[in-house]
Length: 95
Image 1 (tube, rainbow, N blue to C red):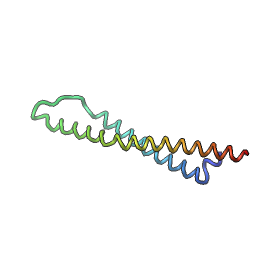
Image 2: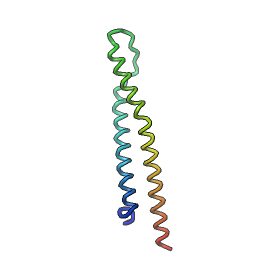
Image 3: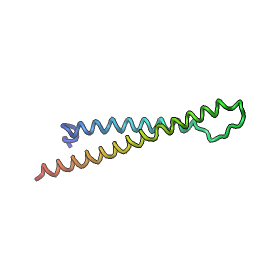
Image 4: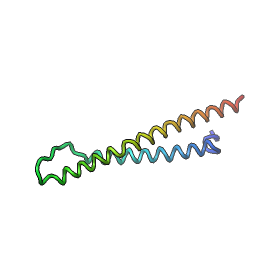
């Protein structure tokens, strides 16, 4: 268990914690923006500002998609790498 908190495995763990925290913040931010998005049709000239606001929210949601996906994949891959390296060092130490 000490190997997880020290050395290069500990550094990888710290990087994983930071990546996962950033990913969670982005997911929560997207959820907050998504709550403000309305599914309405604006037909009148007086409602143009509301339609523009909804378009801006939709574009923010679209822009967040790729970074959230990329950070999620990186976080998962790093977690698999950490677990594999931890098991490998543990099994190698017992031999």
